Amino acid sequence: MDEMMLVRGFWGPRAESVDEISQRLSALGASLDGLVSATIPWRTADGVDVSLADVNAVRAVLDSALERSLDAPEVGMLELFEACGPDAAIWAMTVAAGGTSNARKVKNSVVLEVSGLDSVSMIIGSFLESLVTAWDPDWGDVTSDSILDGLLDRDLLAGRAPKFGHMTYLSSGRRVIESGAIELSIVDLPWGSVVRSPAASRDHLFSVAEAVELTATLSGTEALAETPTSRSKL
Image 1 (tube, rainbow, N blue to C red):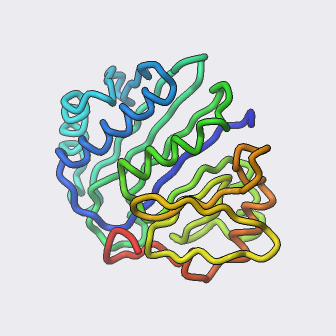
Image 2 (cartoon, one colour):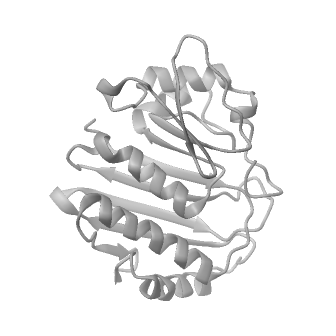
């Protein structure tokens, strides 16, 4: 896949200290470095260089972000990181965490965008697993602009409910059921399960058409119930 890939995780209200968020983010940063066998040179939107694998460096950045957040802790903190990594890959990560408000517009999340990485489809599932392990979200996915456009065309993009991507994570409170025509491979993780294609020839990634059809077919079921506004996950 040549287009930009997004690896995302979303959850509802969850009060977390700067220390807790720093631990989660540095765990993800260290895992990403390991997956690409290199140190990814992250930089904040303010131009500050930071190693996301270094929990103390992350803590310093997030302390500053918290100070700038006039609505914390209700909406938590927001920080953007960017990098030009190995093989000239372009990375961007948006972290919104620590929000405790039950307002529908508040959505704790981590969104990692990657483009230009060689053989990205071979390790993209590991990116998702790293995000899930670090952040324990309600749901997450590996998606792309093509899938998001397809969901928009079918009026499936709005709302807080999960959407299927090339690969999808659903927390343990979401019961995955068979979709009928599209075969599923379900891999259990400590807090939930990853739903992927069983087709090894495509590196276990659903096509755009399959992801959109799965979302349409399972919309309204337990698997794709909306992210709760009174707790972090189902």
